[in-house]
Length: 345
Image 1 (cartoon, rainbow, N blue to C red):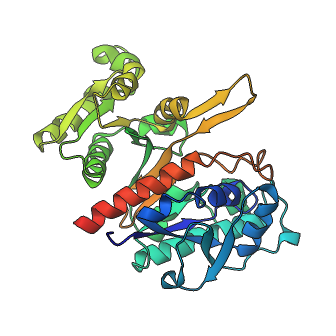
Image 2: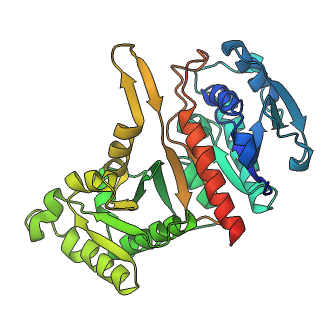
């Protein structure tokens, strides 16, 4: 067997569903065939989560990655000892939870930058909670970019082979429109191309969405396509990239799902998030419960690998043991693929 890659997994907000889905995912035997997963979090929180789950598992507190057992049924954890359960209320934003969640992320980034692990996987954090703890970030993406000192990055969402990257994410819709500039669109096209290469796709096919309805119909409904997006596409093509667009936003995702593209460049947050979550988040109306929550959030352009679940802390489900771990499964699988591709280079 080839050497298994080392995957660090942050626990997420200790008051959310992260601890529960983490235990569920790490009790799947197949994971251990391909990686050595190590949790960065609080042992007290994982032990508390067991009361919500009917599982048989042991925890192995370690101080370094080399100390792990990496066997199914044993979860290796670097215990930061930040949370006393008497000070934490499950399902509620708090300074305690936010401070711990940020510390887990900071630690996992430091480990990756020091080459102690090959990739990082993050469980959901609460933006409100980390801000309560004094950390002024919009989310994981911005934390990673800041702590790795990377100014050019973007978010990719993926549901199996359906992939979307974004020109802008956590800004107002008004600002998102203003951010559609040639330089940024070209930058994201190039990052998207590299992401596909990193996944082993030899000749990536990139679809670029328009900003306006019908991609502005030649300028009838806006100027961004003619002045910013088309020039960026033309330059990308001149650099040898396989790029199509601007494709009307109401059809590009159907084309991508049908296999036209390996990745789509969306112009703003919801343009990319809505189609992916429509596919990955499946609610069973008869049962009145989520049947599946799948999808991966990946930060591109970083010096380290970061994948994440594509959902929030789900405080309303925390403590029930019912939260789906499928998105975390997907995130771990993507991290393994990216880490293996990087090791081969």
